[in-house]
Image (cartoon, rainbow over all chains, first blue to last red; front, side, top):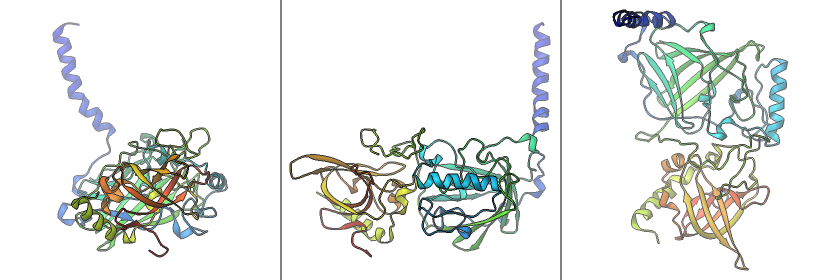
Length: 275
Length: 132
């Protein structure tokens, strides 16, 4: 192959590359994008209201996620109810490690709406970001008019793929492509709630008053749930001028989980376990 | 010795911590190893205040009647949470004499979950008496 032929081939490859990429990307219709001046003001820092029990509406037992006797009642299939009961037993024995404890993977969706510390909900015409201090974690919801990818074009990830639109002051988005419990590293809370890799979530978010944001979730999962599971999470606006800081989880993590026993360790100042 | 800046910060801190709860201490892990009902108190000298994520740790040397020194590790909230409440890296300075209340570890190790501290000037951080 001479130099001239090579130049022509390279030139053609650059010309064709955008066509190939366009063939893989979902179609975008900019006309459906809501302009800035029509979007609600969700600026500031926000904090989840209540503790980290994911679904307090179905909670039985008093206390928090690690209190013996506390559990939730999603409409689980028998197979997933069994998984949940096994997790609860491990929780009661302090042998159910939370993936957060080892500062590694993202918390995923919908758990990203079930975290302590502060949140930013960043509203733009083309995209909506959930940014959490804890973790830290980021999730993107595309609101530029694109469609969700076909199922065969997704693969299980922690936060999946989300596409949404605005209905007045309400953001409505769908999330697919979640990995669920495929690798045993994605939970909804420390009681041991999990979903499968078939889970999809429809979320409606809006301000119900000046200082409260509400997210209504409808979770569907053909493997884990016998019927849709409705969960509501609320967030309170913080004081003006609050700062969000970085959260280097691995900076001084003295509570890693023992990968063999699942026990959460407490390390002394010398790095050796004290429990 | 607390300098003027630290004194101002401390006052702001004490005011702001009025509604502080111990829940954020366990934001990163379960805290299941601590006894939620037991309360222990130690008095000693601050060796180090690890004001770092995901949780802060106050290292305190405590000398018993025989002269033996034990280093205690008292776990507190993340610097992000505490920082917004007015806590600063200098809140616990090396050499500072403090009394700390905490939930002890179930297995008796020299570790605890922070409840409150009595500072050298007698001011209280966090909670001390019931209802405080």
